[in-house]
Image (cartoon, rainbow, N blue to C red; front, side, top):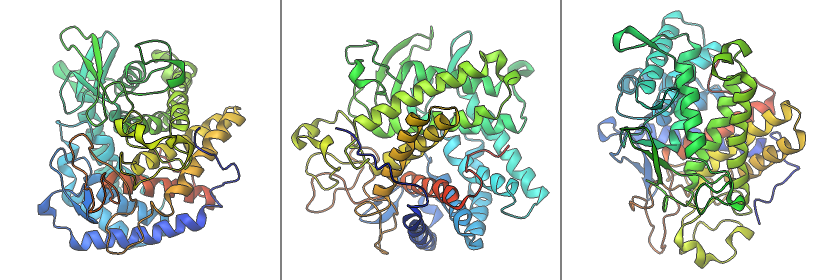
Length: 463
């Protein structure tokens, strides 16, 4: 079966759930802020309801402080603005110049980017000094992110992951946010020999490499690339850095290279539609050197629709997926796609964070398709997004226990490494939250809250 789409849903119909989300969200942010000691590192995921750190990469700190800024955006409570602004100044500078990660779009656009957007929108008082500070941080962040570059052809390449120059991660499609913002701000990125680097070109080339190698289209690229699985994704794509040749798929956080880790798919599903929105703001003339606006947008739509269709067909009826569509324990769950996901089952965990990320992509894709005249297809994606949202913003996924520091329950971090907490009496991870899951639940809620209230459409950029 597939997700059972409720075609009656609207953002306005979900407003009571969204408002409840932000009531709970404020309580969770304040509770964590009161308890957290920055010397302990960045909060990543919860164990028995309490956030702890995990020293892999510090990719979630922007979500911690960005959550306060999203809370201010939705509620107007200035205490959250001050919390997010102060933390950005105090803690985020190392992330701006961090040359060792592919996470700039997560950390810096969620903090400096939200602050600049709020000022540009007139949501916070105009302050030229503060604005210059945010602009400079975002310009540099985009350039540093773009500098992690592996060239695989005359006009081809990708931003490589923290695994090294041979590695492209599906996640990194969301770090194109940082390149897009830096480009919009008019930054001139200079490399060796005073040679300018085209940030827009690198954004488009990374997107094309991801589209070509991380996404499958049912055209027989390997034995598992069949029409019924069109839109499946690989978490990692491996290249030979000596000659630029693609070698194989791989998976860091999924079950295996030939199965689909659902959060990796969700990053792609969210990334391409939001980049479509960014590219729509550029002129035909600006995009002409890169193949033309129409062709670029068509390619981005092709990718987004493929992964969206896979998500809809390979996710249980409620809209929340299991952590990997090929996870070995799923065979013990019977016809699991023909009923709601079961977070307390004994075989495989679900991943609510993948659903929160994917829902935003489905919604943005749906609105874009309706805008260009593909109303029926667009409505399907839009209503699917709202169906997923309705599920997430209620039991058993919404965390209403004041003693639990998370907002969105049943998130999974790294199943293969065994990092996720398995509560007493359970056999698989469940009942816990992640900083990225909570942030994207808030971002989804803000997007729909603004739609329901007739406020300006929420994007990561503000031109």
